[in-house]
Length: 430
View 1 (spheres, rainbow, N blue to C red):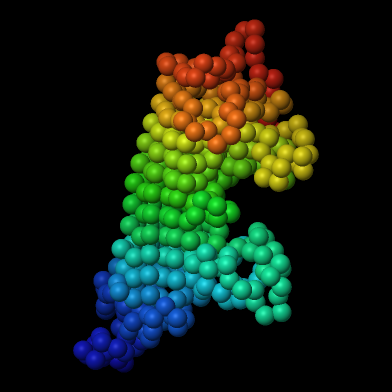
View 2 (view 1 turned 135 degrees about the vertical axis):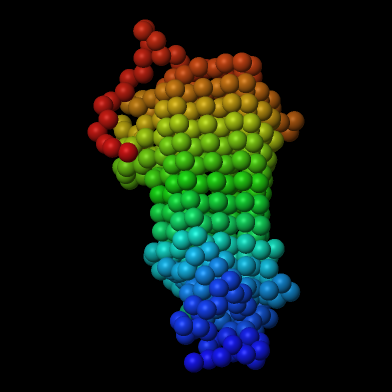
């Protein structure tokens, strides 16, 4: 049995791996430096991180600490539970992903750098930075026996790593940290619930492809607040299986705005409900608030509210697209079905647009219903990026109330005894 001497506390904390000792050490902080981390930004510190995690995982209210003033290079790693209650990863230093392309595994399956699984009551917090070093990845020399062209093909493929991913985890909090330069999605939650994201900063170049800020799928009961997100894709992406999502006080600059979808790809079932985005500031973005649907899918999007949205130099501030195709529309076959959209409110959306103020393009077979535009005031940007277009409402039923500008933005069709949307019977369950 190891004794809890001062020497042990200073350096030999690996002895705490014994369950009997860990059980008597509640509320402990385990620095990765004590587990052999070099913390020089060059040496791989993955083993030290895993060792600290395995000990802390068995201690109630434990903390794994990456201290300030240090740089920790970490290879792709999985940190999993189940662990004891209220485990915290305290990032006060800088965590670095491998900068060379050859350091990342090649796979046709989705990759993750920091992969968290099966956790309850877990927190990531701190004053530090999680850096994916993807700028280095994009400009790096190709691995041995690989041409520059094939290296570019590898990076352009759909298997670029997600920086931080949570799977099947509940009551998780991420707060205060900075996440930057991800090869793909920055922060992803999959099959999880009870998620709180507060006061974080996400930063990647506006031209970095597929770098969603926060990506949600099959995840419920999510609160995202008081955060700044700049990336090359959706600032927040909400995918199938998500419900009870609340976003407030978010700055999106640059990016593709707040997006529900794309949903229904490859004729799949997609269900999203009860989403609120309020007090959102979107700048220098492709879209403001958007719902995007592939043709041919089934399912529903319902009870979505966008309120107090401020936009500046946004190409299209308000968008519903049931003809979405990220390969160019000419390469996507026309299909009759679509994920149904009902109960969408845009309230107090104000600011400037560079291309089109409103684009509501809904399916001929399954039009959008219950769409409301309330106090929408949009004006052209002083220096538009391209020729501007007027608002579009195609097979979109609802009403406009209050001040709606520019003229024609309230182009919604009304459902009454004389005009009703043509819909097909539902043959699915969400």
